[in-house]
Length: 125
Length: 107
Image (cartoon, rainbow over all chains, first blue to last red; front, top):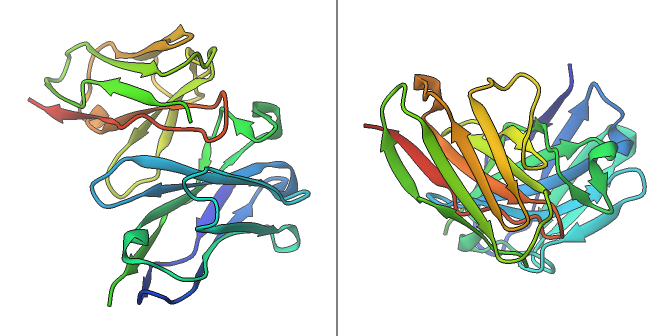
């Protein structure tokens, strides 16, 4: 079965670091782009960035550049989203999604048909 | 960034109604426009890609049209399971921005 399984919900304090994961299975992980999407409470979807696990080519939305780090370890078919210093405004649901290479051009992917279940991150003092 | 504006932001409709959602881009995205359905507690689900191609397994009551800057998602006969929030997304350029969403509620 083709799937992405994300790590569990997190509750953190402002200033703490965090790394959440997205593990792919049932497909050729290195060759699919993986994107990250944020949904803040009561708000819409926001495209954060994308990575090609095969060579770790990574693109960020300007809104998230410098705020998060996207990485991947193809040896364990897992992508990551990490923060070095969380803020209360990072409280959100985070989704990973995968796209087949034939539906992508230089990081622009128009078919994200494999989604993780989401990871809720709560940042509160 | 390319901005996507959806209208309406919300609508109330009855089962069996025909529903149309509009997505306008701040500049041409060619036909690189997708539509997603999102229900609370679930991952978004791809409905339509490259403006009018129906994703495998998605009912044919969902249709997409448009190109350039103006796009439409139509649900021909609304079903109970269609009550959700719908987002358009452009993949013409990075970042792949989403519209603000259209919430479809039961009348």
